[in-house]
Each structure stands twice: as structure tokens, then as C-alpha cells.
Amino acid sequence: MSTNPRAAIVGQSGGPTAAINASLAGVIKAARSNENISRIYGMRYGIEGLLKDEIIEISLTDEDLSLLASTPASALGSCRLKLPEDMSAGEYDIIDAVFEKYDIGYFFYIGGNDSMDTVAKLTRHFRDSDRDVKVIGVPKTIDNDLTDTDHTPGYGSAAKYIAVTMQEILRDCAVYTKKAVTIVEIMGRDAGWLTAAAALPGRIGKACPDYIYLPEKAFDIDRFMADIQAALEKHPNVVVAVSEGIRDAEGVYIGEAKHKGLDVFGHVNLSGAAKALEIAVKEKIGCKVRSIELNLPQRCASHVASATDIDESIRVGEAAVEAAISGQTGKMMCFVRNTPVYSVDIIPRDISEIANKAKTVPDNYINKDANGVTEECIDYILPLIQGEREIVWENGLPKHFTFDK
Image: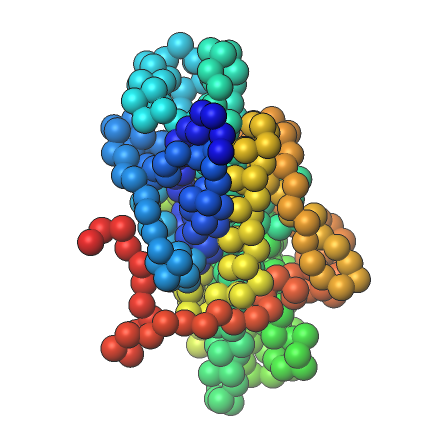
């Protein structure tokens, strides 16, 4: 036994996913069996809850952990609070007091790009104040835009949902002979990884969208109209996928005009790209046209979660605990892909090289006309959506875990 075991605390932040609770389950599973960890605490509503001392002690059975891993959203609750840059700000005094109260020596934060900003700041704060607290970031984002990792937990399940839903939309749209255009809007402000997944149905020899538009390339409305006209000449039912963050050559988001607000991190609140294009197609071409915004189901559809994604998400949570116990701090756990047979290794990398940076879809994953993706892109995504988790059903619905009893 360790001569001085200390408590661990874990929290979740940012947008939920179908896999973020799997990482939480991994952290809890590894922490509860480690002799260096005395107790496991959870912060309700992320760092915001920590500042309010909304802390719960966590003690779960194997059955609880299995159910938690298959439950969507953030079981501990989430937030989008940005810590101050000034290390002398009062928030850090509050954090120190909470850590001292609960004797916390290990801090795990499960989240995306903005959450890794919190990990970086706390790492700096504890280092500068000479406090022995190990701080580890556990990646999570359906956007797949964290750097230094092959992919992010949560992306595979969201990509699987998008591929499945797009396949079903394509099947539905194919039943009529009347000319019609369906525009499907998929999440992705600055990175088109999610929208790229709309191409996956074509790999199994079935129908796929006529066009796919990512935010990495400037969107030209005239070229878009020409694409639609060309597709309508080939068949009556045209289906396209667009990222919510598509923007023109001047950098103006297609869906920005109706939504001028910014979130706490300064990001434009986007929505409406597909609706804007629906109106434009109706005016320019005059055929039947509809827009579909996939919205929240992209990140909470655990009933079609990728088994690969969930399993890797559990592993990355376990690896975070192992890294902290070994003395690592100021790190984010990252996936390294092995080929030709797909597998991943998990290694810690410096948070200072990751926080506040973004990984976009590379040029070699986008076709030369900027209206589709390449086979190389599909090869990258396909292993991440493999397998299905066994779902516990209750009264005809999937059973979910909650800390709120």
C-alpha cells in the first residue's frame, strides 16, 4: 500500500457525447482499484461545480460502471466555464481551498478543446504554486479536432450515427421520381470530420450523398448551384451534406446571418446553413427542396454507438489514471494508430502542445472539386465505427445510468 494515498477527482466539460461516460467509467474503474487513491470524487457540472464545492463521492459497482459506459450525455453534468488567464484571480484560491478540503492529489478532466484549456491552466497554477496535484486531460469531442491524437473519443459513435442516418435518408429520398433536393446539415464549426462521415454508406456499395461540403474549403454558392443542377440531370433525388460551419471566401458563415451571438469562448453560435441553402435552391432552381438539421442526436444517439469508440473511451480513462499514478501531469491522453490491422496505443502528450489548437480535415482527404471526400478519408474513418455495444433494455427503451437517484 502507498504510505500516503490521496483522493482523485473527475469532471466532464463541454458538449456531451455518446462515449464521454465510457471514459468516466474508465477513470472510476482504474482509480477505485489503485492503492495510491484513497477516494474518488466527482465534480458536478465540471469546473463550475468545483468552484461551488458541488462535489460527490463516487462508489459504483461493476454493473453500474457497465451501464454508465453505455449511457449518453455527461452523467456528472457539464459546463462551458473558462478559467481566467490571470493565475492570481480568486477562482484559483477557491480551487485550492476545495482541493485541500478533500485532499485531492489527482485531477482528471474529460472534455474537448476548451476543456483542455482548463487542464493547461490548472497545470500551470499547481506548478507555480508548488502544489503536488497531478492534472490529466481525457479527450472527448465529436468534432475530432484535438491535435496530437489520431482521433478523439466520441467521434466514432457520432460518425456511425451520421453514416447510419444518411443511409436511411438516402433510402427514403430514393422512392420518388419527382425532382427534389435534400440538404442535410451536420455539426462542425471549423472542422468537417463529422460531415465527412456522410460518405461512408458509399463504401458498402450503396447510395451516398451526391455532394459533401466541408468548412475547410471556401463555399461558393454559384458553384453549389451548378453542382445541384448537374446532379438533377442525372437523377431526380439529390441529397447533399453540409457542415454547419461552411463559409464563403470572405470567411462569412453561410448560417451566420441569423445568429450573431458568441458563446463564452468567443465562438459564433451557428445554425441555419442548410435552411439558407434550401431557400437559395428554391429561388434559383425552383424544385422541391427540404433541409434537415441532424442537431443533438449526433452526439447523444447511444443506441447506435460504435463498440470500438466505447471500448477505446474506457481504455483512455483507465490510461489517464495510470499516467497520473506514475507521476505524469500536464498531459492529455492520445491515440496512436497502428496499421495495417487497426488498433491504437494510448500515450500521454504535453497539454501545452494541444490546448487551444485545432485539427482540421487535411487537403488529401477532400476531393479536388471541394464537394466530396477521398477514399483515403473513408479509410481513416471506417475503423472507428466498427461494432455494436450490447444495450440493456427496460420497458422497450434503453436503460441509462444517473447519479441523480
